[in-house]
Length: 277
Image (cartoon, helix red, strand yellow):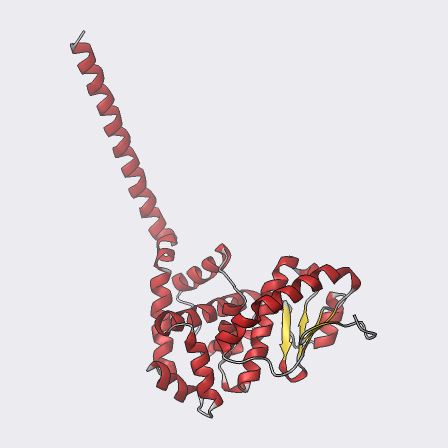
């Protein structure tokens, strides 16, 4: 630690309350262990040092970043200031720090590669979620499943406003963003993220580079994604109450049929046993 209270390792500098010293040590290890993976996904290395701050309280977090920040945020990347700010651990399980810091670092890598205004927000967030190691919880699956049932999936254009959404809608937007990036990777491989960013770095606009590298226009990609999500979450349709009623009826019928068969077999065995006496 230097005289300013910052802990420095390589290109990373941490500022955090003394009580979080163990977390700082852990996160520095996480950053060093994942640096090569981030460079591979984004096709670049960070050009400048990164400062990472953990304010001492929730109030300090919002005072530092301003009132425009959504109240559900767990951290924020500020590429122009080469800074990442993590929300104090009292707000969420400290183990989530790993996912949050890698997510925000993903934004820093993307910003080092291209101007963020060139990139749709869903792609930026989806790629960041990918490199963070985000996995869907049962609640995430339910959020998407419910949107499929209600036909309320968000369009790609709608997801550009996710930072002003309430918590429930934001959760759906982030989940769809990850599914969108996973869909592209499923077809073109993980290098598609780097490939698209390389095209933007050469001066192509998003629509041009997307069409050139994938054969999809944004509109066509949006349609394919909707179909992909519906296919992946077809099981959710069976959870609708009207379907659930008939499923239960069928299950009860099958259960009754099996029990009758078991009872009849027992009776036959008893008759055969009596005949042999």
